[in-house]
Image 1: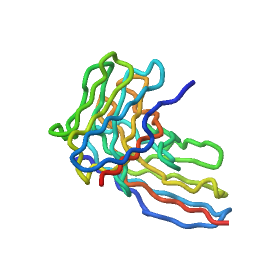
Image 2 (image 1 turned 90 degrees about the vertical axis):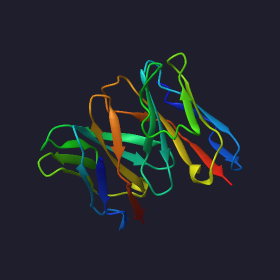
Image 3 (image 1 turned 45 degrees about the vertical axis):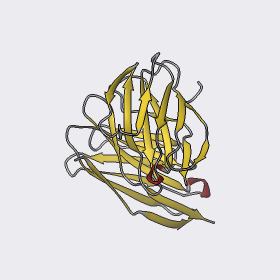
Length: 114
Length: 111
């Protein structure tokens, strides 16, 4: 079974630029999550999708971050404009159902904002 | 606000040692506690615990949950250099599968 796919693996941008990350979950997984992991901290949930609907985006900085999952499969997360404090690893995860806490993570995208 | 606290923050041991990692939590509407191993970037799933006092075991790793005292431990026996990683504890709450993570314990196993 293929795991969660993410791209790119690394990205370096200057502050005020924009960036987008892509995630393809495990086939058949209805729920998709985006997490931000700052160095030395645990992952923090940014947004959760159930199929193509948003379940929780309470911790997403909506003035600069946006995410979509238009067809209920893959998803993109965008930051515009980026700030220095956005430097982090962005992890995508998926789970089979919206009630299962067993989540499977992709390899992540390491973003450096200079 | 939901809170998950792990200790110690970091640990250095020698191969063959046994280690115990701790996770305590204060959350609303507890559903489950999960342990993940993070070596490079992607956390990989180890265990999910939902009931108190029932040990889950996988090879040299085992974990148990105490829902009365609100903590869990992860034991690793006969440690190997390949066990070097960050171990993350996460608590699942509510009906929408939300996870709150601790900051992790960084384990380094030396020869």
